[in-house]
Amino acid sequence: MTARETLKVATAQYPIDAPVTLADWQDKIARWVAEGAATGAELLVFPEYAAIEQAHALGSDVYSDLSATLSRTAELAGERVALHAELAREHGVHILVGSGPLERPDGRYVNAAQLITPHGGVGEQHKLILTPFEHDWGMAAGEEIRVFDTGLGRIGITICYDSEFPLLARAMAKAGAEILLVPQCTERISGHYRVRTGAMSRALENQMAAITSPTVGDALWSPAVDRNAGAAGIYVPAEHGVSDNGALAEGTINEPGWVTGTIDFARLRRLRSGGEMRNFADWLNQPGATSAEKDVTATLVTL
Image (cartoon, rainbow, N blue to C red; front, top):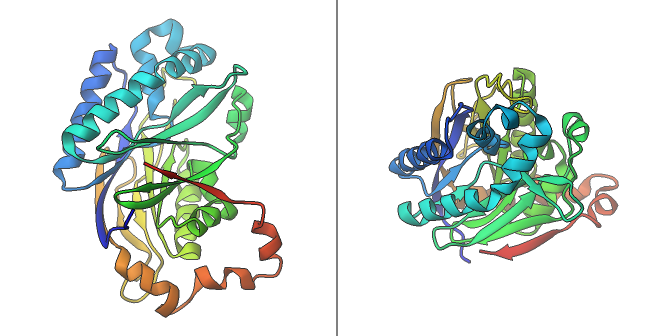
């Protein structure tokens, strides 16, 4: 599909609340999508592990127990995708669904984020590199790097910690990704700044746009997402004519709401042949770069 020249995006600083029922949660998501679409954005980005919020609606036996939280929220994955697909169609937007556990045939869970188009296309990326706490949970790492060819252009997804490892985003960029979505769930402000640094670095290295979306606020009822800190951001290379500091837009730390910005892809594309620097083209000038990336490839999926 033909990539866009410009794109307005809205990325959520999403609070983990305590919905009493699943209907309450659905109403919240519908309200957030409507408010995001009302900004004029065509792409809405929700954070990592936002799906865990559903556990509260299932009662204390579920939300206070980590195993039950993972199991029951995994069971709701199909319904979550269906709700967001309906809202994407209604508002004419692409949506990155807040990620959550998805059960594999072996009984373990992956951390899965779905990208949904207004026409019902669904792409799914699993988190590839697990944090220590996810290892403690018994989560499983994803195995395939994917790039999604959409009406907005080619989009890659690096879920939180994945953004801190350059070969993943490099494979996506080589497959044509110009947009990198970085949903995050970070407990401490230091974690937020690690992901922010990773997103800005991937934008610089690959001369692309990287968009972060965090969970915010405390949810002490949950053993999984009890504390959350961060701010959303839309990042591009710091280059003359694109951005002086690499940040097109950033939110206020821990303040719920949408952060919006417009990405100029025409300017980003020109950087690769006519920018101050040629980071994407010069990547292979690093000693060992060719051998390091030869086995790291992305699968292109058309939505």
